[in-house]
Image 1 (cartoon, rainbow, N blue to C red):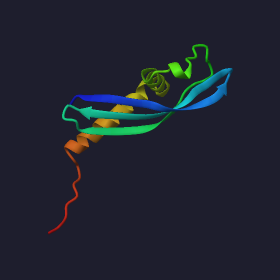
Image 2 (cartoon, helix red, strand yellow):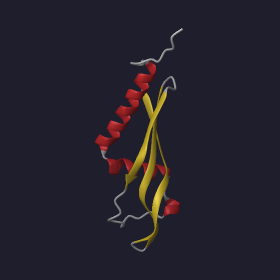
Image 3 (cartoon, helix red, strand yellow):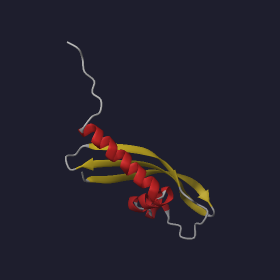
Length: 107
């Protein structure tokens, strides 16, 4: 089963002023969706704090892309956590396709 994963990292928390910079992103509200080839979907969501201890490569808020924010989020989580989230979504999709429990009503 091939699953396509899509990240939404458009919502962030910022420090209005931090270390002489404005609108420093420190927390990302992420939403991860997976869809199989038949458009069966599942999702998980959460927040991820970003390391703001070194702003030498600071990117102005207006110049941050969602792709960049997604990469920061995944890097902060670590590959193991990202794999765990994707596995969770794959399990949810499999459960939708082949449910282990069904609810039925008696006649």
